[in-house]
Image 1 (spheres, rainbow, N blue to C red):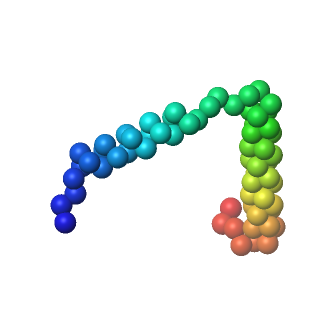
Image 2 (image 1 turned 30 degrees about the vertical axis):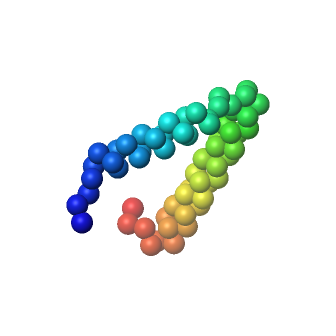
Image 3 (image 1 turned 120 degrees about the vertical axis):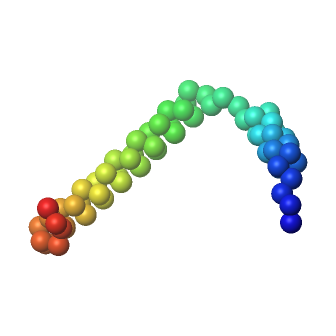
Length: 64
């Protein structure tokens, strides 16, 4: 089976155009909500990572 790079590229460009036409700029309120959710997610992941680090550090399993 031979891949037709030209048709694959054309299909990708057409799909990209469709997405850009439908997409809209978020309002300030939508942006604030997305920023808060993203920030909370980053903090939660950091807390989980720190807890795992402490568990390994105090249990003696970790190499450090």
